[in-house]
Amino acid sequence: MTELHAPAPLGVPTSTRHSFHLPHLPALSMAPRWAALLLAIWCSLALNQAWWRKLAELSSEQSLSAWQMTLTALVLTAATYLWFMLLSWPKVRRVGWSMTLLVAASVQYFMLHYGIVMDSSMVRNTLQTNTSESLALLSSGLLVHVLLYAGLPIAALYGWVELKSTAWRRDLWRSALLVLTNIAVLVGGGLLLYKPMAPLVRNHTEIRYLINPLASVVSFSHVTLKPLFKRPLAFQTISNDATLGRSYGLQGMGMTAASAPAAASGNKPPLLVLIVGETTRADHFGLNGYPRNTTPEMEARHVISWRNVQSCGTNTLASVPCMFSHLGKSGFESRKFEYENLLDVLNAAGLNVDWLDNQAGCKDVCNRISHAQADQVASKDLVERWCKDGECLDQLMVELLNERLQTVNSHGKNNGTVLVLHQMGSHGPAYYRRSSQPSKHFQPECTTNVTSDCSRGQLVNVYDNSMVETDHFVARTIDWLKTQQDRYETGLIYLSDHGESLGENGLYLHGLPYVIAPQAQKHVPWVLWPGSLLSRTRVNETCVRQDLDQALTHDNFYHTVLGLLDVRSNSYQSARDALQNCRPATPKTFS
Image (cartoon, rainbow, N blue to C red; front, side, top):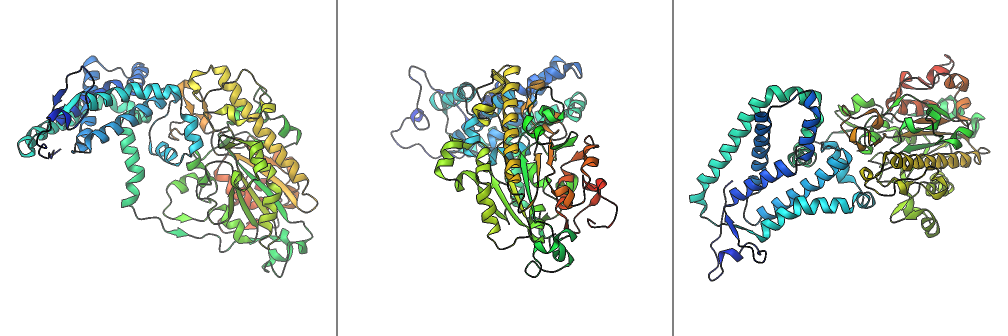
């Protein structure tokens, strides 16, 4: 990197122009290129512990010789050095180097303690994390780790190392020679390591995301810079043909809402609550055979629980837009356009739709319908009862159901209503904050957000307590729906966005790349409380309960909801409707 240097002010010693010095410690004067090399060596040896640990774990599968390990370290150092040299501009280098060290130290802490990897998906999650979620991740352990692995080199950089100022024309060739040498090491070493490393990278793709700090740099660039050079996807509507089916009477025969109110059919209008669960593992649901009864209240209300359901992603940002899409996982991830979603179709068909959020937003799913953040529309008394330190228990949303129903129905339509509740659920790592005192059935529980500091038993206890809280929340919502049955045909669907790792194989939280994520992060619960909506749309409940092990995914959600509500659209696929096989073959109401 070419280095430009301004002439020194007259009368100002060189040693005081760029840094303060630690007392009683003589300044170490060096050219910036050598300081960059020292920092690269520090990153390779001290800030790549997760990388070296993973290689050690895989030694039984592919053992590297001593010279191959040494060459690996040299290649890591060379690649990191090139990054530091990119930042080697006067007035920028110290800040850029320091920020790199701070990020690398922080990322290493989460790699070592939570088993995360820094792929693009994790970067997106990080950028969309709200303040309360960020604070939950802070801990004394993180602070100590950052002070040790970033604070020490930064202190040396500012308080001990004096970066020499040299004429850039005379110094350019030296820097260029060192850069070219590192490029040669990177290319040559990569070729020599290809044969032993290729099988590891192919079979364990996560290891490429453990290279620190380069994985963070590449993933962050992919998320922030790539869209700048990519044309935004054009927006396509899919709701123009959406209509209400025959169960709505004259409305289902093509008449408008104004000329054919829902009451004309003889049926009450539907009221469906969709609960978007958060971080719920299917294998910790008592309804699904978990030895602990974490779902006693839902069981008492005779809900239907499908046991073999896979999520679209391993984080909220990936899963929520995907599950509300008509495309399915593969189609959504390879889409050439942005499309309207399930809520747009329901709204266009003539139903009232509202989204109530108790988490970090709807990920653009609710942009074109009525929506609100729970703590922002709740009264002061409710916030004081259900919220603490900027986070609220999901029960706050139950308290707001009457208000949201009245608000959305004030728009003038009365063909039916869909209320979407987005949970905080079991979002980690502060699981102990996800349950109220009556739900803390399992003790002792982990009471810190540093999950790796807790025993396996404590971690499972606190997570299961959050399951009990979710059970109570869903049960209260069902009980509220029962109070509306004099005016509505009611039903409820609960479906979690993704699962969670609880220390298995050293993994915690969620968000691993889907292809390498364990089942704990992808196997999710899907619950249906039939209410009276099943019979309204001619679904045989006994038939549904006989096939609870059918293989389902988030791909089925969109089409199942349309079928349950008798909403017609060309985007509907009966083969993906989880309830279609339990309807009579004729007439073709749901095609």
